[in-house]
Amino acid sequence: MDTVRIAAVQTPEFRGDVEASLSYAAGVITEASARGARLLCFPECFLQGYLLDEAEARRSALDLASPEFQSIVARLPLTDMVIALGMIEASSGSLFNTAAVIQSGAIKGFYRKTHLLKSEGFFAPGAETPVFSVEGLTFGINICYDTNFPAMAKVIADQGGTLIVCLANNMMPRQRAAEYRDVHNMVRAERCKEHSLWLVSSDIFGERDGRVSWGPTTVIDPYGRVVAQLELEKAGLLVFDIPILRQ
Picture (cartoon, rainbow, N blue to C red):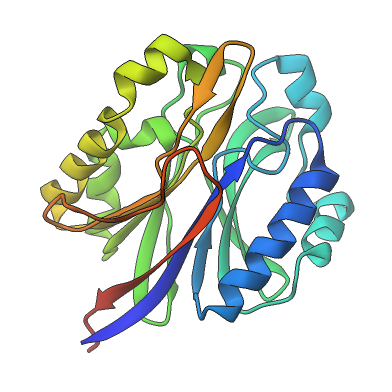
């Protein structure tokens, strides 16, 4: 059976420090590429941080077509591996919680978070769920809360996708984090089983201001089984070979 090697990273939280997140990303990209990954997933809003103050988010937001964002992409290690990079995007006056899809130093596309939490109300919802391909593997993207909605998985499957790439940031108040500790994988497993999809998730870990995130960074198979997962509360790179069917 043919496979495509994918990777997902579990990272510390970076907030308002693009230089630090870029430096961290460069090391991860270099390692994932050296390990033969063809697709790499970063957490939700990884680049600028998961900022829930509108003024702060607006100051940090980047237009994908801007020279500033182009210069950021140019600073990443050059690779033909596909990278899904979480960021805060500005476009035509609106803010979006976005996954930029980057390959060979160019922006190949993007996905904007469709389903927003109340705390994310200043973001505009995305309107499209595109799919992307790498070496015969077709995938679509969900960002965190999106995976609670079965229609999000269906639209990926209907376009021939076999993998959900989930960018997440589960920094929550400690009590809520404890309640949801095992729920993330349970919800995502349901999406996999509904349409025979694989799923890979990337999350952060750490604590701040009474909040905590443990992960998880995980691969779930079409039967809803967790087949690979990084240790919670630690940095790491998860690498896994996804089976594909070739014509």
